[in-house]
Length: 88
Image (cartoon, rainbow, N blue to C red; front, side, top):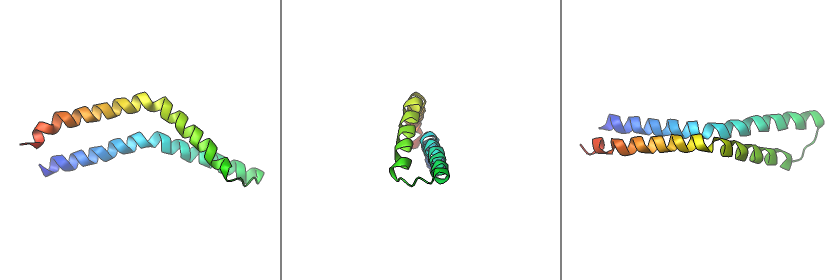
C-alpha cells in the first residue's frame, strides 16, 4: 500500500516537472539571450529582461497547451483508475 502511494507521489512530481519544463526552459534561454544582448550593448534597462520572458513563456504555454492538457487528462484518468486499488 505504501509503495503504491510513494510511486504515485513520484509520478506526480514527474508529471509536474515535465509540464513546467517548456515554460522554464523558454524563460531561461530568453533571459540568457537578453543578458548577452545587454552585456554587449551595455544597456542596463531592468524592464528589458522581463517583457521578452513574459511574452516568450506565454507563447510557449499557448503552443504546448494541447499537449499539457492531454498529459494532465491521462494522469488524472490513471489516478481515477487506481483508486479502487487504494481501498483494498
